[in-house]
Length: 578
Image 1: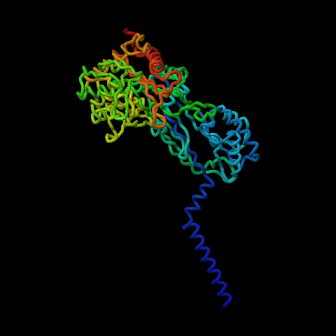
Image 2: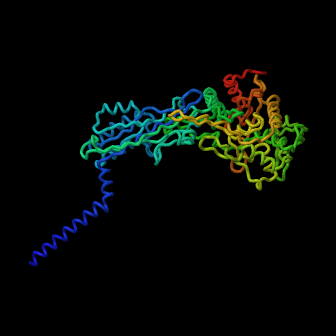
Image 3: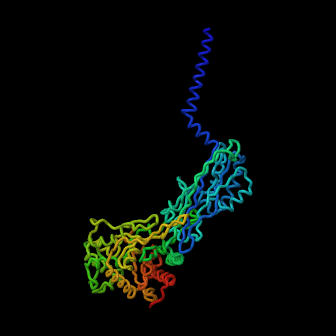
């Protein structure tokens, strides 16, 4: 009897233990095991949204081309090494493969390293599917299908395509992957990334444990994708093409380190052209053979001391604040001494009594310094800030720098004098072009813009109208300044400008580059910025960094600017008027 009771209690204890175990597994740990089970029999596939296109003056600058994500079922592949070699060889027939499937930047043999990665992925026998590559074009996918490798699947994964190659690449930026997936880098691709990329969809399907095909009656869920919006730019493709060709010619002809350009519509602030050389191919940005490559937009990110192109801004500040009158004169009787410092003319020649017109024609540093001292640091600095120096203009591109305008407490007398002719202050090419646009348009600083409108896939539009930032000088001051810029060209020392059969207004700038706390006379930034005097349909700035054939703007960047002006003037309907 005792044995019977003991056996009953033992059985009851076992039954209770089983109940507790089942309760623990099915209730307490049920959700965990359900998720693990679903993970073993179901796969979720992301369906990438189609990225929005980018248009400029009727042409297509960025779109998408058919490509695929290549997925393998490791259980179906026996010889990992041989299969990986065959697949890898096909992958690397695509010259853009590494742009979307990068290996370590330290890799000495990218193809061998990527094949090793494929071998490792194919060894994961517990996985139903592994991603072997992204953005594989149709031609390579067809070759992979011809190999008849078991267990390969292909899913739509379109990739970015730039029909015009490297054209406007510094404006466009590029598309690549990071830890969070695909996104735009630099330029428009980054600034408008949220609008361009849309929202990805997804499909989740159940699979048989032993077969690669989905279960026909299994559970399947889908999330609908939303394709990205298209951008329509203010860029004039004709002007952009000409300027890109000219800046490349100029950099090579004058042995410069780099060159950049900006063309603005002064009335609206819209960017008509912008770029630099060197540049890069946005569709093949990881090209290891491209030794000379610049992926930044130098007109936005390169801050430099502008030199004499600042003089018209100083004059505008003096006239508008009524610190001086248009009849103001100065005496150039030698180098200007300020404490232990000395400011001299660029050629050490001196001219006696001089006017504002002669100040610009001879690009006289002594006159500009005396003018700055007469205006005063509070007033001159406030006008510099009002013209947009020392802050972002708000252009719809990624990477804009603010430049450098010192705090008022740091403006000694020598700093004030130097600022008058563009030393000790840092600007970007975009800031300077916008400042001259304000002179050309009657005194209003406009927000520079690249995108005119955004259109989603349902046809809904978002328009971006011209946007004034503020009035910086009066219409009267702007007209006097424009007249002075015209006189600077007419009576200046550049033969290229004097022989130009168009009436233009503008100013040269040659700025020595500071190295080790001292300005180097052998290294300069040379700039010319100007506009057609009568029409004023555009303002164009061209800058060369460290030309080696000559350090002076008059014999480097000015001839280049004149060539570019004569090439693009017909596109604006401008005829010779001299």
